[in-house]
Length: 146
Picture: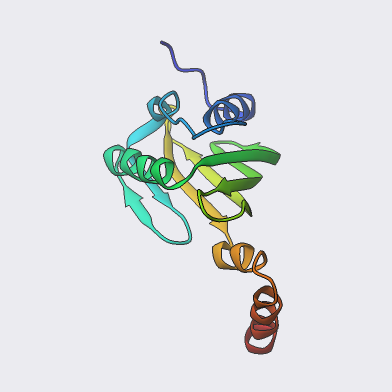
């Protein structure tokens, strides 16, 4: 199957197929858009190469019962695509947890995703869902960093 050029419309289409409204995510259709030397980085890890990236996606699929993502806004400037999202993770024993974040994609000259950087506040979004603890965590951050 032929790859479509990576632009705003293609990213919206691919990501909407990846994160299901029911069930586990499926990245199989999107891997062909990633460069073999892709560098992925987020709050907790840095991964280099398509094989490591695919392994990370498999681990995430195994950990979650369901994973949804809503793209809130998206923009492109040359070979860079930025988008804001809300990702809701559902686990077997824990309540759904919405994470709010952004992704920066850098597209290579030959049309593959060469770099992906995800930005989000993992602990803040999780702690916000824990009664009383969320307020304590936020007060701590304001005292120490605000």
